[in-house]
Length: 345
Image 1 (tube, helix red, strand yellow):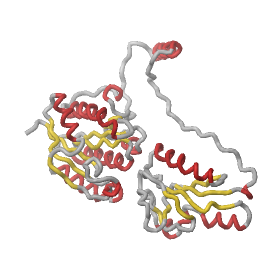
Image 2 (tube, one colour; image 1 turned 90 degrees about the horizontal axis):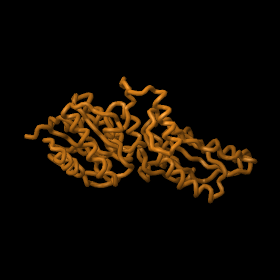
Image 3 (cartoon, helix red, strand yellow; image 1 turned 30 degrees about the vertical axis):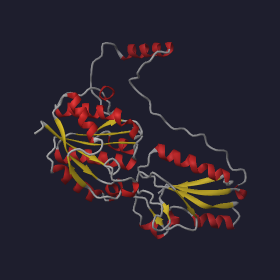
Image 4 (tube, rainbow, N blue to C red; image 1 turned 45 degrees about the vertical axis):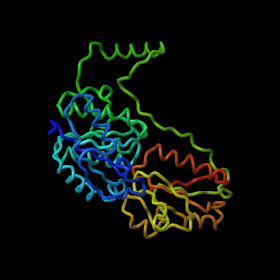
């Protein structure tokens, strides 16, 4: 028997079951290593630690996020059956639903089983912001191309947690800062360190700030519409309004796609972050096509664009949202749209 037993949680893609078409598979467990677990096992061997991945738990991203309570119970029971000393989830990179699932699993393991858990994801993954205060999240690149870089960091951090060794700073250990402050003493005062950094900056030398400022995304407002009565107006929503049956299978959270539909083809909401009752009764409550049609008849706007663009903003990453808008904005401009009304939930 190995000294330390580890369980690995992965989604349907990394288990080589399939992509989005298999995202609804229910949890299952397998003995031993599956997919990227082989790389993790190799990293433990390099570190000289007697740790073995004794089991892998797999769950589809859609199934986990759309059946949260049930999926959590099922996954936890499967993990418990292996009696692990530590659980590793992912890494999820920039996959939003996978990141949310990995963070949920890691926190659940810590809270319920009282054993350490680690995951890994890109800093802009919505799961990173949701769970960075609760679990150790190794900072990764935004795609699976960063797997080779991520696994050694995850294995090293896991090794320290298993041995109950003291961890260094987030920069030293490779995990996303958790917002936890610790008291420590420095040889130089804050004023001296600030002057040192200023001199390094003036000289063009590399330095690391002790207080990184938040990066605010500032957007220059567009020019005002000169004559709204002659303007073509389009509707865009992050409220998940789709035709009945959600034909393009836009995810209920952490969307990887958007849809373009006729304004006369609104049926329901695919959004998983609010009570859908009233939106399903009348989608105009989220996407006000009826009001804009009235305004067009009254001559208060020039024309209502015949299509709307939609996705779900629930957990969807900033990077994905920007990519969606960059793509469909070109079509809107080409079609002569002069203004967009963006509605949420």
